[in-house]
Image (tube, rainbow, N blue to C red; front, side, top):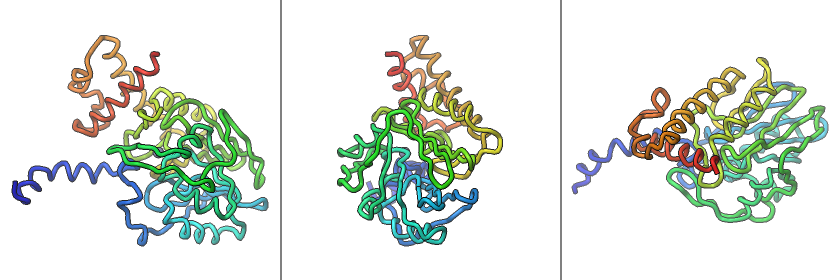
Length: 306
Ligand SMILES: [Zn+2]
């Protein structure tokens, strides 16, 4: 096949690949970090959000005790992140909480860890970081982190920080985006960081092959909806700042899709029959990306039944 013919034939798929650019295919290898600029948004007197590549929104809490950050993006961005934080405070990063182990949220761990930052995560996320992992669509490898990049403090269900005048509740509800997600709630500032349990790029990627589950996503979001109020600022793992209503709408989408698929599974329908019924109607266009999502939801429901 000539190159032109090849290009014409596969143009659609190439387009699809680039336009479905989420954390799934934004691996560190295929990005140019030199041009990335870190954007800082002030949320309250002590809380900020940093954005870089569009991946892994970073939360920053500054104050008299020190600097506490949520996620640290990709390793090549560490210096730029430090410069952005230095404009907010002269105190170094003392604590980092990883919302989960995916590299677009934890890639800076080794750099910060070598400088003395103490990393905190849900226990399963540390286990993932200790060994080589495959994840994403298409799957790519994430090598095991060296010791400075590993969390020194882990928790199974919850841990509370009393820091910079904030009561910071960190909790894990269920297997959701991964099997090691952490939600962070700053009580006094009324700010929540959701990690990738909540994203704004459309229907979320759920790392089901590595223990994620749509039922746990719905359950986790329900508990956050019960915790927050109309004034709460919600930081998603990817995308723009949000409010409680956005979270409720997002959970309605997850529930609707899950229920459409589960109902057909209960009726004994095959995967092919479910795919052809277009259960993502209204949310995701039919095609390879939709099929992947359906498989993930199908497998989630199957696992939850056991
Ligand atoms: Zn993720």
